Image (tube, rainbow, N blue to C red; front, side):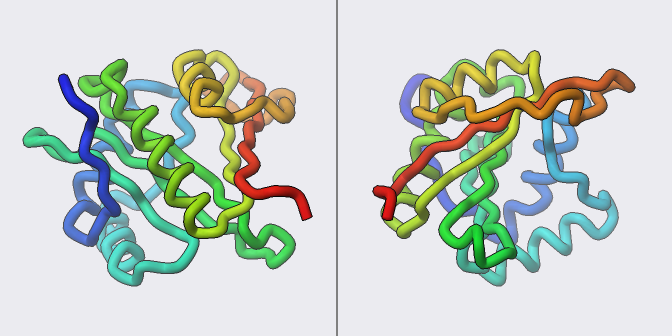
Amino acid sequence: MSRAPAIRWAGPDDAEGILALNASVAHEAPEYLGQALDPVSGAEMLQAKLAAGLVGDGVLVTVTAGGVVGALTLRAHAHPAFAGVLQLGLCVAPRARREGVGLALTAAAISLSRAGGVRRLQLAVIDGNGAALSLFLKAGFAVEGRLRQAALVGGVARDVIAMGLGLASEP
């Protein structure tokens, strides 16, 4: 991509493309913390969620002629103690990496979240996924902790790096 990628909110018609992207990245990168969705009902469930436009939940996408090449999920926590906190998940197609898609999606999520009154974004990265760690540090996230051997990747226990970004002033 020679110019900044176009980013928009995903709609129901993007569900199959998002699932295909998720599956291809999960297959290619075992460190990817993707969503486990049933391949049979997953598209219908995702379409329904995208159509509902739930407040605090959403998916940003970058789409090219080849389909969805980037998706960023924002999920609200259910417990009221975490009001204003969104969990972020990012997925970029191998063919679109190192072209600014991930950073552009992350910057858009930060901007939209800040404008929407979100007070904090947080995410998790499997230790060893240097590209993701580097991208999120560049976007302003900070490493806030390490969960020792919290994830099994290929049958091997790996650390999970907790990262966060405050968007609002402390009360």
